[in-house]
Image (cartoon, rainbow, N blue to C red; front, side):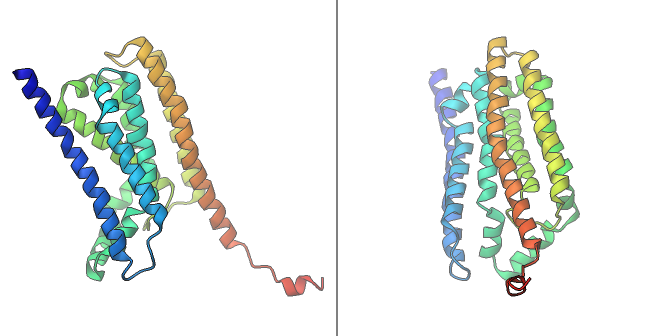
Length: 266
């Protein structure tokens, strides 16, 4: 009787994130169509990035991967890659803040812009702060007893998942500027922070391989660490490509336009 009640309670809780994610998908689509009335058509690929990004988040918090992650460190690490790395990149590529600004009324959009230019946002949009929140949080999670505690406390488990996603998204949007950004940093500065951050991620995966977190079997820790190392590198290539591509476009825009007519006589 108690088991059935527990499973029913857990099953009902699973519906909450599903409903939230489906609602986010619907609201994004409606916002896109609504903004088309006053602006040029919202690109189709933005809808794709938003939908696949939400799917990555869903796979990490609901379903087989999420269920296995409570007792399988490899599944947990797969969820980390989806929730903290791939999902945030795809959602950032969907430019949600730009869509919000397009959808809001002028007065509301101006209020939001004021918030985006505020001091707290300026601090959070610093790549160093974003990197510390993202990768520093992972070091705390896997080198202390926090990992064991989150498996036994539902609220802490939820908090860690929210932090992993939000920190991953914040780090992504401070590395590549898809949405409007009021506090911009140079490509060189962001590149240095990105290199150091990826190195930190790789070192952490090796540390996990050599020193498994409390409560994690050696074999599972080794598999999870390898997934974190190689899977993280694959996803990081996408972030590196985006930064380099934006840097290249910025460089091309600064090049002087050649005078073809004069060159013909030189």
